[in-house]
Image (cartoon, rainbow, N blue to C red):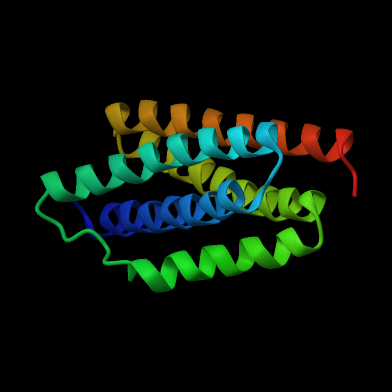
Length: 148
């Protein structure tokens, strides 16, 4: 496994872990059952993504980034709380920003993985890109139907 691949895997692990922390803060902060349910689903999916990248690194005997749990969770929670104070629409905007960043990174990694013949990894990356796109669609739809 080359250094660039290791860097990318660690980057995705970190990004997905941050998304989990942010979305978890929305689950616990909201009193809207539908809104919370959507974020619970996103936490489940993003956690699966983070777990995948951790497993790939672990199988290659590469140290998984040690994200200081409480600090990282507090950062995700703080950002989530700040967005939550200004309403669900702003929280969705921040979620869209995170998802957009993830989609850009996935698209670049998918292109790179084709060039380097990582076909098995590429298939998983495309699955995860689709998840991010679905999250984006939900967030946009929710913002449209529930403007603050």
